[in-house]
Amino acid sequence: MKKVRKAIFPVGGLGTRFLPATKAMPKEMLPVVDKPLIQYAVEEAAAAGIEEFIFVTGRGKTSIEDHFDHSFELESMLKDRGNNNALDDLSGLVRAPGSICYLRQQEPLGLGHAVWCARHLINDEPFAVLSADDFILSDQPCLKQMVEAYDDGNMVAVTNVPQQNVSRYGILDVDRDEGNKVWAKGVVEKPPVDKAPSNVAIIGRYVLLPEIFTHLERQERGAGGEIQLTDAFIPMIGKYPFVGYRFKGRRFDCGSKEGLLAANLNVAFKRDDLKQSVTQEIQALYDEISEHSQNVKIKGA
Ligand code: G1P
Image (tube, rainbow, N blue to C red; front, side):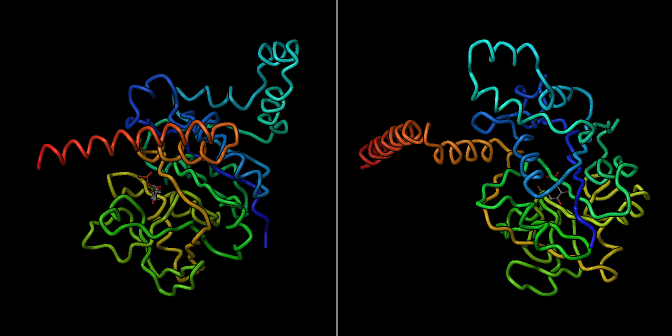
């Protein structure tokens, strides 16, 4: 079996849900505490053994390129000040020369289209796709868990979602559920709640066969009028295994404000330098809420 060496990061999305924050800044650069979302995704890929990092970007995304490059002025200033910790953090961002590449998706035509844009950079080998919006807190990085469990076919990270939320996701039609591996006989992108075959939802981590490009090539429009990655799995089911991998960890939908807030709180709470102040803040909020609900009760009595 060929090693999974390459990863595609689709980062062309507009981030309208975070306007005005994302007017002049890519949504992938929004921080969870002090690191941008895209950095977590790149670190996760590197921990899974990825050697080549392919970013499918769009207009207004150049700060992502700058983030993963040297900043000589900043580095020399930190050196002069003897701030070695910050220097180490920055130098860890710069990967081996030639291992990162950026290409543009000129039009936002969907996730399937974004992945297809990178087709000439993937040879005859399985590759990973990571969505920075899906932030995953886990002991072992999610993609590493998947790469270790992968043996053939297409594999997608999955989690069970509340039934009322199925229409936000790619949903598996489950054939055999073995706990951490779910074998699917079909998949549907963003089904209406009453038509969903299950509540097993795709999360933005994939290990895919290069044959998927043949199917994406057809550029067929699916849910929301977009070229969907999910739709390209369908003709491959039966020919190759199609497996949902129930990763160990918690996923935060950082494409939503609630998810980004929750991710920030949870990461801060796990950090020695922030745990105390976060706890105090949560306690203060909790007191305020309790006081408020008491007032409401008294008023109602
Ligand atoms: C994409 C995929 C969908 C998947 C989701 C996970 O949708 O198309 O299958 O369930 O990511 O985050 P998007 O959220 O980009 O609309």
